[in-house]
Each structure stands twice: as C-alpha cells, then as structure tokens.
Amino acid sequence: MDQLAAISSGHLRIDLDAIGRNWSALDKISPGTLTGAVVKANGYGLGLEPVAKALAKAGAQFFFVANPEEGLVLRKALPNAHIFILGGLWPGASDLYAAQRMMPMLHSMAMLDEWLNFCVQRGEAYPAALNFDTGMNRLGFRMSDVNWVRQQMQRSGYQPQVIMSHLCCADQQNHEKNRTQLALFQSIMAHFPDTPASLANSAGLMANKANHFQLVRPGIALYGGRAIAGRKNPLTQVVSLEVPILQVRDGKTGETVGYGAEYTLQRDSRIAIISLGYADGFLRSASSSNSHQGARLAINGHLVPVLGKVSMDLVALDVTGFGHNGPVPGEMVEVLGPNVTIDDLADAAGTIGYEILTSLKGRYNRTYFGIELE
Ligand SMILES: *Cc1c(COP(=O)(O)O)cnc(C)c1O
Image (cartoon, rainbow, N blue to C red; front, side, top):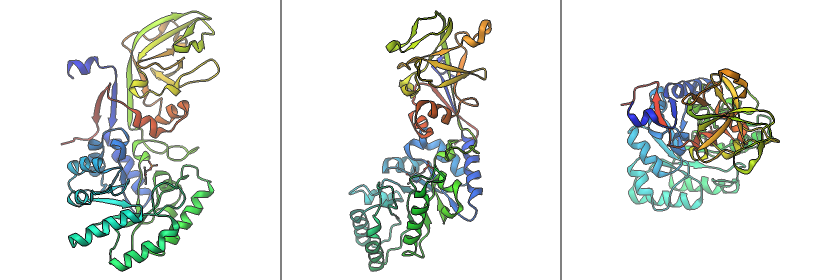
C-alpha cells in the first residue's frame, strides 16, 4: 500500500466475487430466462469497469446503462457485451450508437422515427429495444401508442430486439400496480408475439416468476441491496467501508454536540469523533437529535449511535457503552459491513440502499477484491 493509501481517511472494499455470486443466484431464480445486469450510474456507485468485468466473468452478457457516455466506458471494458442505453436515443447520436454497438431503448415516436430513418439511410437494421410505459409515467410509449408502434414495425419490417416495461412498485409485494402493470405488459406482448420481452428489475424478478419472460434486469440485488421491503435479503453484501477515529473525548450531562446544538447529552458520555461526513456521501439525514434517532455504526461488532448533526468531514459517535475499554484514536469504525448494511443505513437516513451506494465518494481508498481483473 502506498503512503497516501496508508493514511487515507478510510477504506472502501468492494467484493467483486460477491457481485458475481449475486448474479448467479439471481440467474438461478429465473431458469430459462436471460439474466442481464444493470450497471448504470457507474455500477451503482461501485465502479462501472470492475463491476461489469466481474458480472461478465460470472456469465452476464446483457448490460444496461443510463446514457451513451456510460455505454462507451462499458464498451471499452467489455468488447463483446450486449449494451442497452436505458435513457434512450440521444438526438443525433445514432451514428455513435451504431458504431459502438449500443442499443437504445426507444421511448417515443420521435426516437423511433429517428432510429428507423437512420437504419433506412444505412441500409441496416441496427438493433434496439422498445420501451412501453405501463404505469410509471416516466419514459416509454404510452399505451395509446401501441397500435401505431406495431404498424410502424409492420410497415418498415423492423424487428426490435426486445420489448420492455418497468415496474414502479415491485418492492412492495402486495401493491396492486404489480398486477395491473403485468396485465398491461402482456397485452402489449400480444402485439409483438415474436419479440423477446423484459419486465423485471431485481424486485420484480424475486417477487414473481410471472414477471420473468425472456430477459430480466436486476440492479440493486447484484450489489447486495434489499430489493423487496419487509423480506429477508437473501443476497450477499458487497461493500464495506471503514473510517478511523480521530479523537475520543468526554462530554458532560447537559452539554450539546455538533452544529445546531440539537443533541443535548443526557448523561456523562464518551464521544468518538470519526473521519467521515456528508462530503463522503454519509448523508446528513443520518444525523440524530434528542427526539430523533440517527444512524448506528459499529466498533468491534458493537453498534454505536451517531450523536447530533453529521458535519462535512466529521461525525460524533456515542461510545459511552464501552466503559473503560473504549476505542482509541486510529481504531477503525465500520460504516458499512457485516454489522451495518446499506439498508440499515438507508432506513436510518430515510432513504433507500440505492442512494447510499450511489452517494459513495472518492475520499477513501477503494480496493477491489475477489477476482483478478486484467
Ligand atoms: C434501474 C433499472 C433497473 C434495475 O432496477 P433495480 O431495482 O436496481 O433492480 C431495471 N430496469 C430499468 C428500466 C431501470 O431503470
């Protein structure tokens, strides 16, 4: 380890083998279905290139990224991967997509027109996917466009690679939307009987076999996140983050801790100050006050609560419970790991594991382990 790494403010470890095993576990849940991998947002914050290589090594061949920039990085890393661009066709970018073998999700009449015109002009049917909106009101053709789209396909003779839609409530197993979106998607499939279909994200895949069809698109579950609320997460944790204690101090009953003086000590306390803050992606909403419990981190396997506001670079922890055997400066605190999952942190901060992962920043030393990357 070089000198800077040795004194860096923390260690983020990313277990690539665990990502591969999570992919294989999801692949087993959907036998006979192609299992893709969503690696948008820089591989959910964990690093697009290493993450994608680990997934390819496990067997993934179909990848989804958000935009063409991510597609280019992925193309460099995996020359043979099938790459879908979830955001669609950027106006004027057909050339780039074709040259780099990136497949846009076509979401609108304008995108479909642009793509088909490009294909005619080049005399080649470059592959793309059609995305239908079955209830999210985000991207995709509206249900009322389905006939028009089918006619366009018949007229042009163009055969889409896949038709897809996206579930908005798959994390809530009993939500009525899951049934209505599935039924609408099946009604669309009837218009494109020879085209492979894709509906399920992680939660959709884990919740119901009826969502599988020909291709599934897990994201968060690959990275160890909880896909379905209120259900035990069967997947393996992928990230751990440790940061050092800078100072351990005494605080007296009645004194306050941190900005805004929103936490008043209710007892004489030992307080550990750690090298971590919202500038590291440790969300400010993980702060505590006397009326609101914040996040809990871990020292030697024991959970320790955050005291007061999370600062830009510092967090205070209540280590009174350790008594005389308390932690000392230089000792590492587990921010994420075996005792604190991304979902524990997300629940405490009023958000979701996705945001915890994609908030991870660059001030700590990142190491990848588990598989050899060329
Ligand atoms: C992000 C995304 C996914 C993956 O969702 P997870 O909940 O992370 O599994 C799948 N499909 C689309 C269209 C997405 O945008």
